[in-house]
Amino acid sequence: MSLEGRVALVTGGTRGVGRAISLALAEDGADVAVNYTRDEDAAAETVAAIEKIGRRVKAYRASIQNYDEDEMMVNEILEDLGPISILVNNAGIASRGNSVVDTDPEELVRVVSVHAFAPHYLSKLVLPSMRNELRGDIIMISSTATKGLGANGAPYNMGKTAQEALAQTLYKEERKNNVRVNVVAPGLVETEMGRRLVRATQGIDDLRELDATSPFGRVCQPEDISNVVRFLVSERNSYVTGERLYVNGGSA
Image (spheres, rainbow, N blue to C red):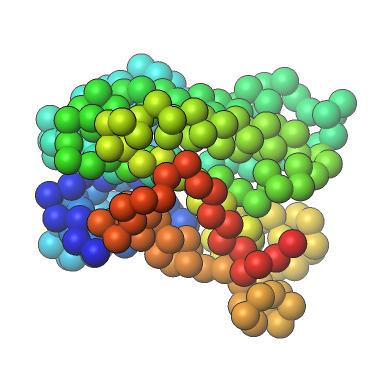
């Protein structure tokens, strides 16, 4: 699945699922711009790993919910690596598990901004040059939370639902420009965020305790997500757009 000659921007691309996606795209031949917010050590480690693969790579620090920072980042990527033909809107943050009545308005703004406003900003900024490429792909990393929209998670539910609505709008607008837009929706994934979630909701510190009751005898891994993404952006996917793919082992 050669991505030779293509440039990918992966938000939240230095840890967890984002790191797995960054590495997978590099392994398939793409040059990669990895976005991060705070963890410089993780950014440096991811850059080193991609350089070892033999691809061009650079880390860009930006708070993606800030349009001005996004614009600066995209302009730098265009200058450093060239036109972006793969955009993976992966960065995400969890809400605090409160009811609507107990949710701080600042939390609502922060969570919805990361999951909904930021993908809109970045799509807007990337698309003008992406349209001139032979092919473009925009991937939204959503969540199975949009299936059930459970209690005590309104900011996260709202942000991810809005992100998926953006994808549905974008694929209709950009199909004529040979841009494919798809949603990948994981369930629980073994990342630091996943471990914190399980610790907070179930009091479990070791995710190995969940393997026996998980589909296929194990908790979902970041590579399970990145393998779906690498297919969707590859030449093997010529006819899938506007779709949401659940990666949760068939869990209800």
